[in-house]
Length: 441
Image (tube, rainbow, N blue to C red; front, side, top):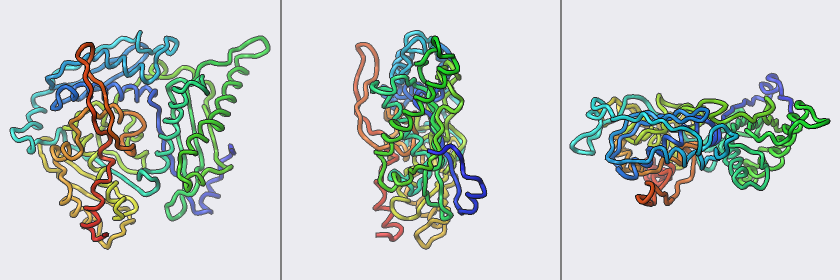
């Protein structure tokens, strides 16, 4: 694996270009905050499906602060939820300076504003208005099996596997929960991925080599970095590559540039190293910069907030359009006015990749007729009034596999289980309808 980049001149001469996306692990402080917010949301919705929740979380050294607005008949063990999520992520040792046993939890949740609520709830549920104004986007492209951009999909895969290795506890036993990845993909002049150009992995770790007689602090740090780099190259990356389809495996070659912990030692991390906040990784949550992102974050918001629900619905449309063969890629924009049920606009941009003899405007008009994009219609179609959100808060809200799981809620003697369907917006359940509408059967 080389450490020298090709020059810009070489890139231009070849006619190729580079595109980069990043991801962060479940132990990254911002993602810790996202997962706590969404776990709290799930607890409310599990007990009262009509709960209105806008929950923000801050995490720092030894402290969790939860704030926001709630309208619900549910009563939850907020402190217990926070501690459970922190422990599940892997912050379970005092030396991390943030762990489930010792951290303080401060709640500043209060009742939702009546001014906002009256714009959302209606006597007829189908007339429910949007919880806010704004624009939301969905995107899909044919670079991967899950119709996600390749750079982001690989960035997520690297960190998901790194977390699996950490939790297995049989190799790379020095790993701590905080980590980031970055993948650069080389594209042909025609816009097709041809090679994995650069991978960056930064992972928190124990101080597993200590200074000793004959080993200076600087030498100990260097030895740790050498071991981590070796393990990333010989354990992590091969495990990820083995899970990929053959065409993407072929994009990994000996000229791959690999950077591992490029600043050196990374022992201090997580909420102790950097304060985390809900909603600060919105590009990681969506399309890694390849698509677009609207004005709002997702985590901690119930589905009456179109920031979240309409973004999921737009992804559902984009994915089914690409899977149906309408275009190689599709960017769907939808926009709302607060308190108004029908969107003020819906637009599909195929970026010149359409495979049907229609303009993007004509495609947009047909899509608008096919999909009910009112908040209530989205909630019903995608089954969003269910406790399905904690799982969205790490490794991307888009591109994950839809599945049914059984989850447990409540506390003490009031615990109960629910089976729910996760990532419903990733289903390819409208492909046949779209093919028929666009004459592709």
